[in-house]
Length: 315
Image (tube, rainbow, N blue to C red):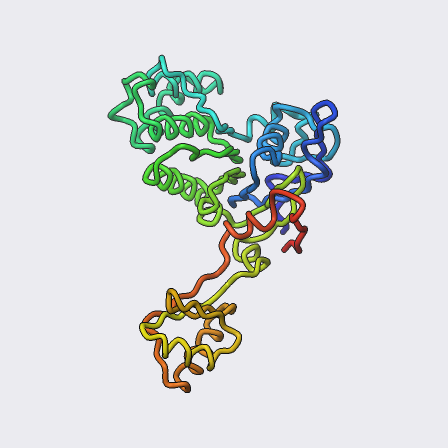
């Protein structure tokens, strides 16, 4: 049996006045997965999230969220989703408990259930000790955790996270990552927009690169990395004579006499074995060998930001 997508969108267009923002976006997001949208500022990420979460209408396109049409069934869509935006929705004048109870009331949860959910989420996000403090006294990481807890008060099946870890320290960021993984393990679908490429690499099953309002590449992180050249192997020596001998054995490699290194444009274990075999035949042994494969930083730089942007195959 085929499972319906959590998000299905075809041909989504949006302009503000004479300024086009989205140019025919197509998306299919499987339930219980993390789908990441990468892109520079102004690429259209937040606009797309706002459209999918019923906050603004598209100019054209067909959309289904959890099987519902946002244009004709906005209440059904809103009942299925939660949204954590770039800017915290936490009320600093209220305590952590009061913020969560307010959200429970807005979701029309029964009184006792709302209070129970608030206590559960405070405990889950390690905020119980600060529950009765005004949120204005919370650290940035605590406010972000409270913000996410407020989004989860209604038990959404689909969660939109729009750059959720911007400004967080590494420890708080990883704490939030663990919470996202836990949600997905329990069947929640997450659409994540981020400029932290490690975040997408760590969390997402599928990544779409958005640039100038268009998806220029889409696939798993491993697939996207395979599209960008740049992997190499570097061998380091302690003696200039060894570097010269290695250069003779590997004429395609690029020597650097200043750092006594030799760089070979190649990738993978077979290439590394061939390199070491040739060096062994030449009677030279490097003191260190390292490999570097393209990462999502390389993908981001290669595919976004200007006239060099190129469309690449999608998986």
